[in-house]
Amino acid sequence: MNPPLLEILLQLHFEPIELTSDRLQYFYRMNNDLLPETKAADEPNVACYLSMDRLDCLTISPECAELHSKRGVSFPTLRSSWARLLGSLLRIFSVSVLKQISLAYFNEIPIDDLRTFRTYMNIGIEMPAALRERVEFFRSEFTYKYDFGEIKVWLQPDWNDQMQNYCIQLNLESRQLGPLEPEQLIAKIQQLHEGIKDVFRQILSEDYIRSLPQ
Image (cartoon, rainbow, N blue to C red; front, side, top):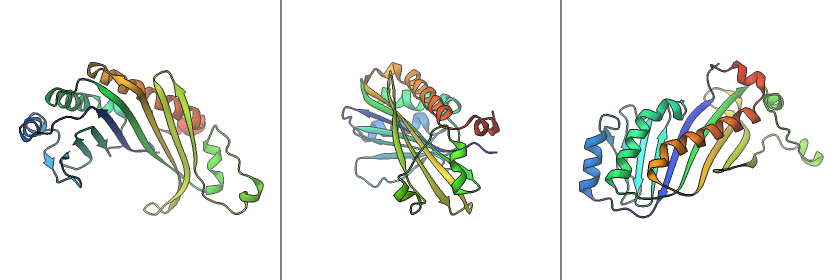
């Protein structure tokens, strides 16, 4: 069975920075072996860099940076390349304090029958009797509190058109609330990852987790 992770998204929020052409060019020269492609962004004053296969993307705006990967792997596997990109970004654009960071994982779990999706879960989700017979697809949202902040969870049964089967969409966003020093960033992302891993194991059944590649 393949791991359910489809995408991972890291967001950094900071005080406004100057995206001057010389700084953007310098950043590109320092990192074009990782992100050699550039593309025009939908908004002005935004820079966008992509990997050759377009599975990795970094978007930089004056108050936010987003690092996005569709490789289906979690932060520990990406840590080496991400640490280099983020260290370069913070240094070149003189980011002194991070206002907030978040790490989000987007998962899709194939299931044989929509009615059996609860067997994958450790949590119970009950619907009012008046709705149970009429509603097939519904979405649940809840929040786990941690010392570093919170983890938001979105859970929804759905239909995958490409695979032609039912699935569970399980999205988890781990948020660091409050300011953070740049030198603490990589350790903090690891902490956010560990929080997501903990919630993932709380939500999904042990039988399903044992079936995944370890």
